[in-house]
Length: 384
Image 1 (spheres, rainbow, N blue to C red):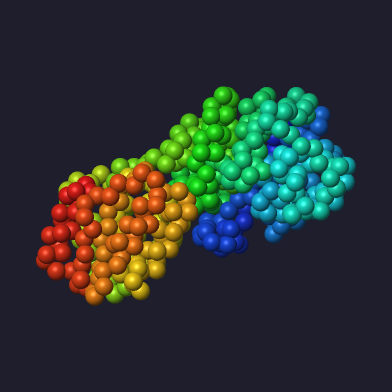
Image 2: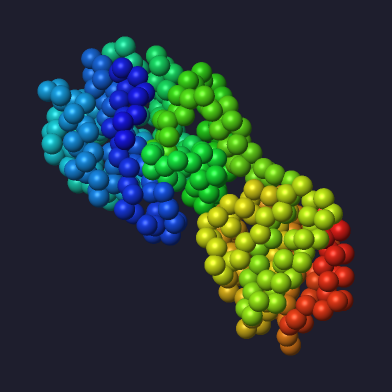
């Protein structure tokens, strides 16, 4: 897809509509973009490469923009294979080109490509690279979301090349907004590393930024204040919306029925926002996203093998691994003979930071009875 950035800064990335699972686990119905850029000045710099599956298409884009010239530098912001999969190919094509990366990236580089060490230039915090009228300033961004990550800022055109920060799922030609797939991308990929993201945001706050060029998703211009505000909310682990996310895992349908009942009760009581997902069927990454988005999480699941039904166990594991915190949590269990779901879920949430439990756990025994509806109504009253 042709994207206009400026006369000197060219988009040379590619869309991938064939990949079904990003990083082997995240469903991407609208594909993914592998973004790469070219700065043409007295010196020419390539900004990252793309996944190996798109090397041929990417090299064609690069050669079209280069014409008869050759690149002087390849800036490596992030080593993950979807951004360095074409690194060896372009290094072989342009043997005089130098690589520019962080010291940590240089140490890790042999894991990803066989490149001569004397071709690599390392940059530290605040160091620059002169290209002519354009100058790149480098900022380290460790654990956003790998330890070797750096970002760069071009001061003449006020462009932030942000690595994986501010990225999203979806090809560039996908007809969709930024926030939904950016939120799912953030919480599932970057979400554990809120503190490093906060550090990067503080660095970015000192810059005048007119354009953000991430490694995935659209080039950002007019929406930058909104995007940075959302990143601040997400990385500080604060809820984006007041409301309830109901996550349920039902074996025979009775817990699902209870979930529908309490959802209706919450809406009747004026809860500002109620979302619900079936953990056995819905996209796990989207469920994680919704848990972080809302101020209250209601987990409803059957007891199972002395613990909790496996889709709920998997969901809570995902939340824990992504540093879920600062939320209210309510629990409902279904137990035909040995109630174990609520205590199992509670024990997991007690290991997370700043979790406030709302009300007492409601226990349903197999089918939903009038007394259970009263208990669900009372819990909804406490949650709303």
